[in-house]
Length: 278
Ligand code: SF4
Image 1 (cartoon, protein in one colour):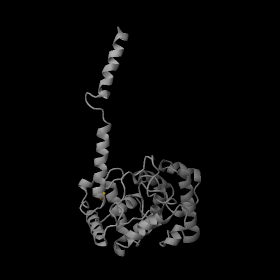
Image 2 (tube, protein in one colour):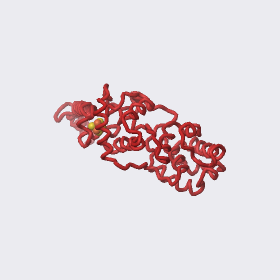
Image 3 (tube, helix red, strand yellow):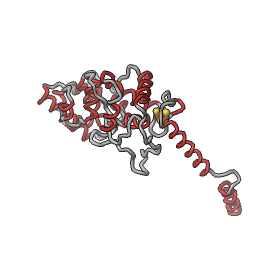
Image 4 (tube, protein in one colour):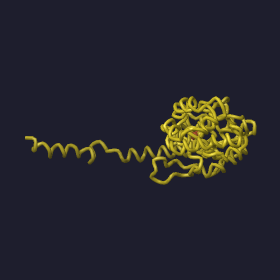
């Protein structure tokens, strides 16, 4: 999925101070009541009743490779990359026999292309050697493949096989915390808390409800709370409002005042420069 964190790294609760990705809006300190959490999720479900992955794929093999390529890359970029890759290597057997340099050139635009090329080839070889060239459905077998962590396995299980799995990417992590569904500071904790709120049959959709909400409304730097259908229930709505008010106040305090010293400075500069031009 897009904007994903690497499978091997936990999602940080807070990026290092000064980092361009550092979230500056605090998360709620308490979880909402279970009934409120269920209502929040029901609203998101109503907004996205039949969600689909944004990754293009036609087989579980293609989805698995696309998800591996999507780490720290957008779905749109992956979708531009995979047609040529799958035309050349349509299945696990073909990819297992690929030259790494050729795969690298095909996936270069996805970033981390050496590691990703190495992983998808190693993954394809394991599929051929241990699974008859097919993608396994169970978590343990998926997570044993190169480049596949818990999140990628969950996406493949839920999207390719309609399995009961809930993948936590950076959007799911952020939106779940803002909604007060969890106080978890690791993807695994967030997964455990959200899974406890969603009926098993709907679990594979819950991932998309939260991702789509995060991409369209509950955005990372500035959530669009005024346009958010969950606003009345969300404990972050007031936190965000206070944050934006504080930010506006700081911005106006820092702006030069009309007629003030900062505004007068250019006039003084012109006055000093004038004799020199004569
Ligand atoms: S009210 Fe704001 S913080 Fe809460 S879910 Fe909506 S956009 Fe996100």
